[in-house]
Image 1 (spheres, rainbow, N blue to C red):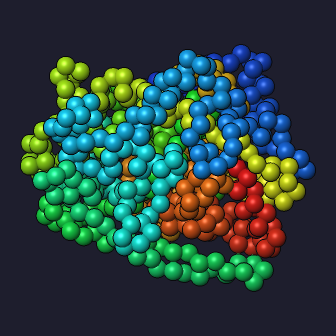
Image 2 (image 1 turned 180 degrees about the horizontal axis):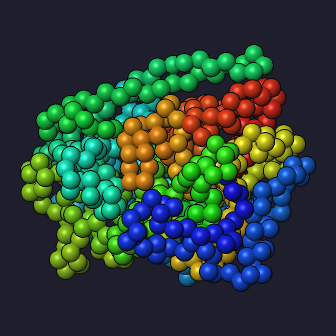
Image 3 (image 1 turned 135 degrees about the vertical axis):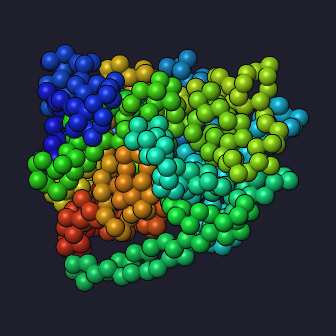
Length: 507
């Protein structure tokens, strides 16, 4: 894996497994920096080899945007610290819309109706509680509002194959239930169904006489209201991702992500990360996927629009179906009133609603690091690097000078992700391809803020389906390209393993 940021990188359509006719509109070389600045960026982002003290600027993982507010239950909800007074207004207006409860149509609150008709949550904040991480249901009586089930089927026709090959779609929806199972519905309409989870436990022996227990989820789909699902349906549970630092991830220059890609493992280190490719719905151009568990959306704005539609059933200028996720087979759902107000526009959430939510989402600040000079934290940092964790969880980037949001421009950030797809092995496989990602591939999850999950959200559930109950379990589930690093953690003595966890908790 090449860890230097990519001067001289040249990426061709063939290298990304594209047809020759596919253009690459994103930059494959940094064109925002002078030669002098490029050299500075390469120097400052080079992985450290010293672990006797914190690195310069490590205390502020979000650069000048880092929040230094108290790391309490609201630690993920603060604005970028470098927003101007004028920029704080759209941030807080966007926050209000993010928390807004939508209602079914027609209603007396015309500016808030349009919910569903099928949906998973009534507000963005219901999934991303306190702008943080979702969790599986804690009991049979707990709903799955911060978790959902994705659905798709294999391609069945030549047209399906062509659409997938051309990135016109990233998956084929289940014919009756669409792209995800909707467990709520407006009055008078049946929800699609629900799912329940049971777990199989396996004990893992660790060096030093310690053990850990891993739980694998077993899913049961129940109470289907619109007939049986296709026998070849592919399902995948997903908890909501934390919202911090999204704008900074959006501002990483494409060339810096592509510089880390090694799809054929040319350097023989066993790590073969590859970029996710998607179509930008605004331009139709092929671009890098950055967000979601499989990097299937290209920007914070697109991610917000797809969540409005899929999770809440609200149409926006980017996803215009007012009936949300109602499939063609659900005619009763499609015939229900929508929340479109012609005097305001042709969708239920006309401009400026989506841009405001996107601005809010892009400017949720990363909290400052804690205890980074603590000797145990520094020892754990050395373990993180020496076991190979940093090969995929790339510590540092410098964002683009011409990023869309001013607050994210030319910042040294510490997200601990390469933004690439990696084969994580059979243990974590969901068997459900999405665009560039196979059923065993996942985007490297950013680690910044991970140590504050319990403080903000009251739990320590990690990985795409929340199966890991703590950070050690999350590490032990790593396989595939991460198997060697995982095995090194298993072989550590208990003191070194505890230091690694202590380091992660400081992020």
